[in-house]
Image 1 (cartoon, rainbow, N blue to C red):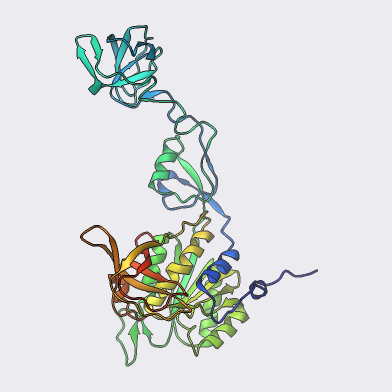
Image 2 (image 1 turned 180 degrees about the horizontal axis):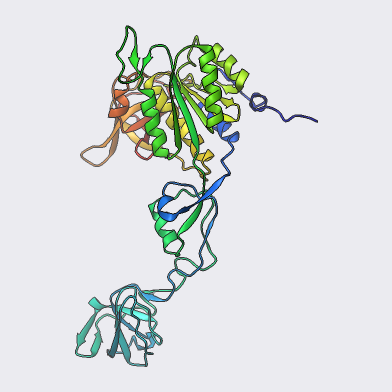
Length: 421
């Protein structure tokens, strides 16, 4: 029996495949092509489903609205009477308390927003365009026939697909489903993501620092980004630079999670070891990206789990997560389509230094000038270890591989951070 090609074999057959310096767009495409979303589902009460992804389409069991109703507070009557100067008021209709009778020629009823349009009426005049004296309504400004009426099924028709499989449930979706009288939904199970930091120099919070050591910040930024995505998080702590321990931890993580994230251990001087370890346990597709920050990024499989080896520098961890891992996790969660992150244009107020041949994600502060025009300025030092720059920034200045140094006043693309996850 012929065995199917491996992940790395399929990748290496692609044109222009370069695992040592893959363009950002090509790396995103390769990752997306080899993701397999979860298929297991669970049924949840509607209030517990916020942020989850629909596993079954929602079909409307009824018309919304369920009846013709008034879009305004005013008076309901038949359009044949539009040319009449005045009409007799014979009753009132409230939302939830309809008028039971049938209107005849020359008659109208007072009607409130949302109230059922009574038999014999097809038009509503706004109360501001009518005058009332006793039981007589005088038309001051004639409406068009059928004005201000919301028809049954105008929003949704019975049997209509309201939300498709793969839709993430936001507050608006919860309300929409509730409007159909549906109290439970089928959603995909939560994605399980395990992560750990590597390096002898790392120390957990609460322990004293030794000479040359630093506190591990990456696990906290990763935890925060994963928490906002709504996945099940498995924090495996810090793993020191011991091959046997690292191998054991990778195996353990891959058996517990759908995705394994590591930070550190894939930079120059360590890549050969990591590559061999990953190839022993699974497959590695690429381990360098033509980008800054975040060039040392590995992607592959460890057992059945998808693996992302993120850089060790704090900013690079966040940038590579936002640009690669976020989309991959949303796709694995079953979300379809994964929302693209728009690139907006703004004028850069300061010159930018950049080498052509790689994509850069510089941290920036997006603001409007006194005329309301969007502008952006870099946060300052763009070093991949300056975590403060991520806290100060509200956007990435996205500079593609063809761009080199830019003078102040150049229009650039920006990616707003709020809403990235």
